[in-house]
Image (cartoon, rainbow, N blue to C red; front, side, top):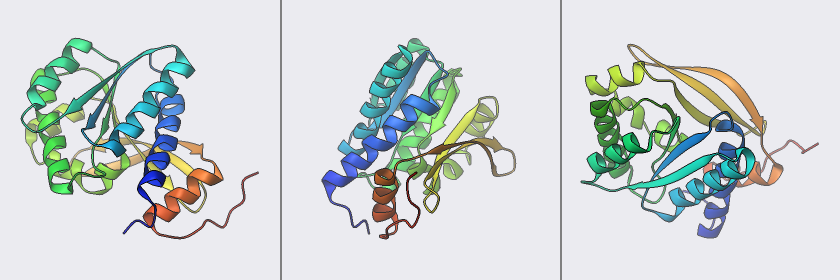
Length: 203
C-alpha cells in the first residue's frame, strides 16, 4: 500500500510525465497521449504533453478512453496520425478495468492498423497488462510490426530505464536508455512503491 498522500501521488506522476515528455518523446514531432479518466493518469499525461511541447515545439493531443469508447478513440488516433502514442493506464482505476481497457484499445488499434510507435506506462506493464493483451493473436501480430517501448525505474540508482519490447513467444525487454531522475523524484517513487528512502546522493 502506498505511503504517499494523494497530493504526493499527483506530483510524483507529474515528475514522471515531465521526464517522459522532454526525454523519451523528444525525437518525435507529433504525439498522441491516451489516458484513462482519472486524476493520476491525467497528471502524468498533462506533464508529458506540456514538457514535450516546451522541449520540442511539437504537437501533442490528449485522448481519454472509457469503457465502450475504445473504437471511437482508435478512430480518432488514426485520424490524428501521430508518430508516437503514449498509453497511460492504471493508477486509481481497478487493475481489472485498466487491463480490459488497455487490451480493448490495442485490439481496436490493431483492427485499424494504426502506424505509430507505442510507449507503455510502467504501471500497466508490471501489472501484466501487455501479457494479457497479446493473448489476442490480432494484438500480438500488430505489436510485432510496431516499435513498442516501456519505461521502468531503477529505484536504488535513481534512473528511469527505457526498454524496447520484443514480442515473440513471450515478452523480452532490451534496455536502450538510462535517464537520471532527481532525488526528489526517486524518494517519492521509493515512498510510493516500497516505503523507503534512497541511499544515493544527487551530485
